[in-house]
Length: 186
Image 1 (cartoon, rainbow, N blue to C red):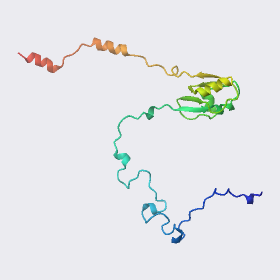
Image 2 (image 1 turned 135 degrees about the horizontal axis):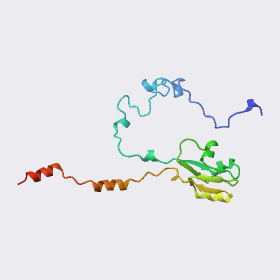
Image 3 (image 1 turned 60 degrees about the vertical axis):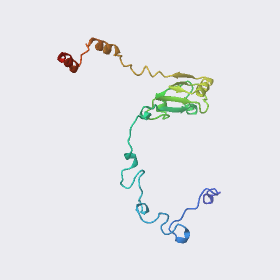
Image 4 (image 1 turned 135 degrees about the vertical axis):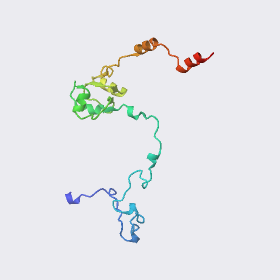
């Protein structure tokens, strides 16, 4: 077989729709673009949600309420077959995974999933590990350590005692209108 003998497999290439080749072709005259107008022009396309200058629906609707998407925790997913590139006995943590380009960007933590087989023993430090992944890691002679995120964030000092003490110490004041009513009444 030579280079000039190469052909695509039968059925891999479809016939190209030929436009503007006479009215008998089925795609002649306006070539499937209708009659005139912005969408018939070359380069004339409208962006998503555009309503011809009218206030778009997305801007007409009120936006109220709470959306939890801003508080969603994103975990970097790492499968066992990705960890086979490390040597036996290596401590696999977030720093090592970032250096090897297995995880990128801002993530809350690392979750190890059990896709594939682990070929040798590794010491894995992660935030979450699936049951199947944990079983396969221990079967290969490795170990799993869960990272403690609470130690990284300092706890806010509790000031509840101070507020209650101040509230109890402050005398209750009567409203000025009640005081006037009592003095003026005979």
